[in-house]
Amino acid sequence: MSLTRRDFARQSALTGAGVALAGTVGALATAPNALASTETETESATEESAAAHGGVGYGPLVPDPDGILALPAGFKYRIITYSGRTKLESGEFTPSNHDGTATFDGPRGTTLLVNNHELKGPRANWKYPVPLTEGLVYDPAASGGCTVVEVRPGGHVAEWVGIAGTSTNCAGGSTAWGTWLTCEENSDKAGVNGMTKDHGYVFEVDPHDRRANLDPKPLKYLGRYDHEAVVIDPKRGHAYLTEDASNPNGLLFRWTPPEHFCHGRGKLRTLADDAGVLEAFKCFDSGGQFVDDLSRATKIGTVYGVDWVTVPDRDARTTAVRKQFTDGQVTRARKLEGMWWADGGAYVVSSYARTESPGTAHDGAVWFYDPKRRTLTLKVLLGVNPDPDADGDFDGPDNITVSPYGGLVIAEDGEGIQHLFGATDSGRTYPIARNDLNTGTEEEPEYSEFTGVTFSPDGRTLFANIQDPGIMLAITGPWKRQKRG
Image 1 (cartoon, rainbow, N blue to C red):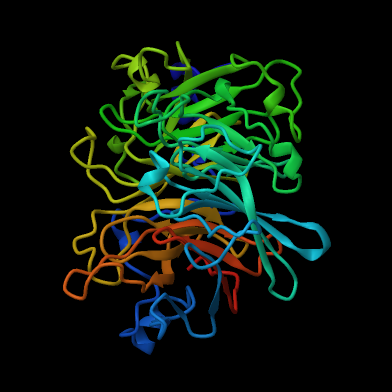
Image 2 (cartoon, rainbow, N blue to C red; image 1 turned 180 degrees about the horizontal axis):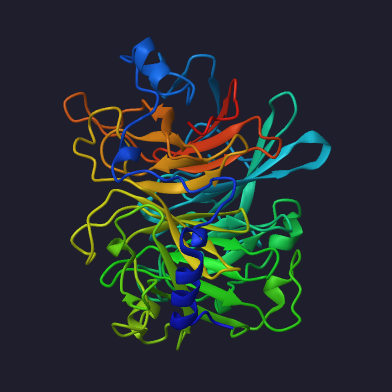
């Protein structure tokens, strides 16, 4: 049953601040732009300023003499895969453009990772596309896909193809039954850009069973559009999906499985192309007023009620899904990116808002959708970064994970310098890593975004990727529970 505007307005009036959500990450209550100021400064930080920050974080970042990854003292990193240098079991080089990643417990103490490769368009456009491994290819013209990486005790690494012939595999998401959902952030149809099949779908990859990945099948009931990320509600069975698009801005989707359907390994590919119901979200404020775009929210703790509107043509045969709705039917947001399921709901990232959004400009927001209350709460809001080339401020959140040590860990995909940074339950932020790999020139430096941030199942290792050229890193060190501040 949907939450009506009247119900939400009455609930807000009765409970007041009680509508705000609690959980591992908590309210993350900060003022706009506060998250663009680190709680542990870079090397110039003084002992006095560190003490004033209440000991949040791990201290200043130390430049890497190898020019790859700056970390706090006591931390170290290891390169797991490196495009064009490390090789798959089959002998080909590791594909480039690492993106969304998840970890799984593997056999005999191993850790399995599934790594998306965000490669768009024809294979000839890329030096290191995902190899066309027999039986694992969807469209032989497409360059993307994902690989499975096995890290064994003692450090040995093996890598093989999980799926090939897909396009622009972006954030994706893991499932409660131990598989990976890889999302195409590109909706080219057959005949466009050399493609031989339609794209814009989600595919399931099983890191534990290579045979389960044979004959890749698009999960068409999840819609055909520029997918970014997906999470599964393990209690209710819904899938939530983000769309990274503009003109008009993208949507947040919910897929409801057919009645009596039970999730499990290999079950998704048994469903018909039109199985279940795909809907887009529609928000309204406590006064019952429709909210056209999430950029309208300017205060941490803003709570919207959420309704869901059925998608008319989920396969977008003639009209893109987001263009099938008129003004007033759905709520939109720019750069809907990474998601993570925790605390009984979905954390959802909107990377920024500028002139393509009708509200207030910002450099990043994190929302929390509570399916039980059917509410969307603004948890993190980054003001516009005044100087992205100066180390210290954060902007452009993308991939996200919930930390076993409290709060969030966020991968930057903004302008200028790129970080992995943490946000505590109370909203204090701190740097975890900085990309020191300059792919530009000394006069005009360029630093690739971070992607695929995720902890190992035991919580001891933080994995993350530098997308260009494509490096998977394992970060270890003296992790500790972060103070609320």
